[in-house]
Length: 407
Image (cartoon, rainbow, N blue to C red):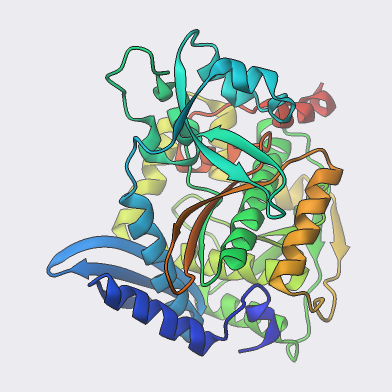
């Protein structure tokens, strides 16, 4: 495998494949996979315990890596789904009101405004082991918003539409999982700000369009292969925010009956971030032929019909992006920096601190072999991306700063 596709791994592909097979065998789980596409593909892996399906996951990219990614994601979902909704410890609203790192995490107010109620939380620690804080399970796990029978517990249904497992990731090592989860948090924040800026507030900022790469370039070859796979042109844009990690978003100009889908990716290595965006677009574009995914897309639009600004975000209208926005061309570097996973984590943590943000990670599962499931939280980042799933969401403090340019 080329370096672009191994930028955030600590094991080789062969080692990672052996690891996941061993983990599944020890759990008594049998994987069944199916592949959609012919070159750049999407692979769905289902894990079975006897005849019962226990979890599913998707992988993307060229066949070998897509298959490996699907198995790891399926195990991630298996471990996530088996976690009890009652895990963690309890905090009162005073804790969040009195802790500075939550000052602009306005979504917490939906819980802390419930006076004299306790909130179930997990403990988070920074990669350096220095910063320690608690954060509500209800915002990091969809299972955590279930009604509670105890009268002194906060009603977490108040944040149910914002609950997401974004920032939860699996890795062959703890550092690997933390890096993937951190990049996902930054990615979803950047996607949220992009949707708000272009569609919700209609500020129409310039589109930073990535220049095409030569066919001899490995990433350029992937771009060409991805276009052949879906049968349409792919546009790649840089949607990075103020953070050092670069975030890219990919979409196709190919017309279709269903709402537009897009792929996104974040990394300190811009080439790897672009790779993730391109392959995720292919995965989702191929998935639009699946009845289950078609229903999800159509249900999302139906949910948002009464809310024109939210509906614009979910529709992702290309006319807005390609014909109403000025376009600035930017070039990707020919090669990515050769940084270890540990070095990338340190750089991300320091960069977030320089921007007044605190990164915390909670280990949810770790095996004797080292395979780790973590959840990463960066308080105050924008969660508006949930609108793409049909959730009726409003921008939080960070997202509302974009409104000033619209007035």
